[in-house]
Length: 437
Image (tube, rainbow, N blue to C red; front, side, top):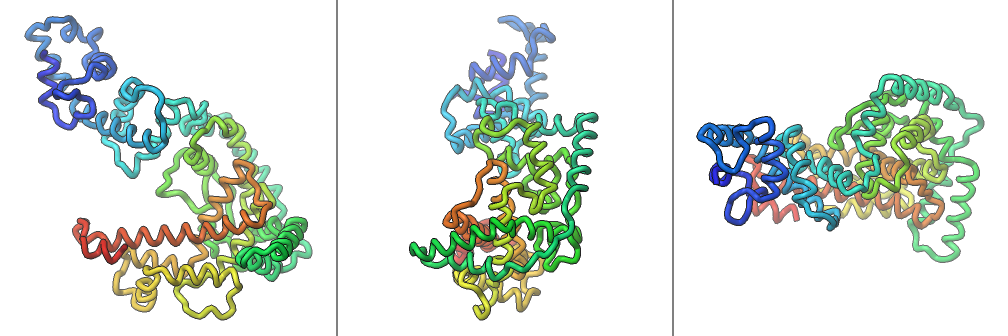
């Protein structure tokens, strides 16, 4: 009765409470007894009947634990939401999650629904056995063990030093890439498809994707990797091992640490048991990071090289299609019809209208559209490379290249909608919401 009375005085713990407001039996069994009251260590809290000192002790310990209990309740709510998203049905959530939520609350405090969604997802995958030891914690421990870290850094030095830095008789394949892209973008008749297969096969046989990737290691290449938005350095640098990552602050593709590259793979996998082990993932990623385009599969390197040719012809802020290939006209035409592009055109002429605002950021992206496009393309190709999914079919080849353009457009549309639907105080406005839609 004492426990029930004190609990009802707490606020923010409804997710851990019953219909009448008292603590659930599992709350007492899994959280309060073993983690808060700890009767073995605190005898005053033990027994069916409490002394006056015991009542005081129970009350004091519950009130002291109030912040972490509130956070535990919010973590439990978040985990249940993510559980539904992942379509997990097995097991009782209270039995499985209560103690882990208390652990997360102790380590992280109240969860941020945007920032900590991935923590919740990783926790669920681990608890339900989908990770098979392939966790970000296991990755961090593997990369930070001193002796192993030294060995892995040595592997990076060796792999980076063995890169072929000089090209012999490399010829410009832009015309052939444009021909392939145009065939892909056109209506696919049987004869057209055969022509595309022929060009694609010749480019693969000549390792055109590998040659283009090798050229990006040179500062003399125009356009270089920095201009394309793939690195912040004049030329790509050997990757660090790293030990932390956040999807909100990931480095540019060629600048990402080994930890960041494997981290994104783990985060994207719904069933990590299907992935290689952490040591195998790390070993393959080191080899990949020292390869042309930071990719191992030739068909994916070819897609990256073709993506550059397509992306450098993207000009959503212009109306003139002169000089554009068929594929570029298809993507540009779709992009130019986006309502937010009209707003961005105005900002391109008068950027002082919204200095530093979210619309100006989108406008800046549209002035150099190849950068967001190629960064997203590399992420898609990297994910396929890890799973050994090649792009030998030209239909799928175009679907990936065109799909990335659509993804960038949708991302911009969402960012503009969010910017237009918030007034200066950050509250939603009905009128701006209707314009954003």
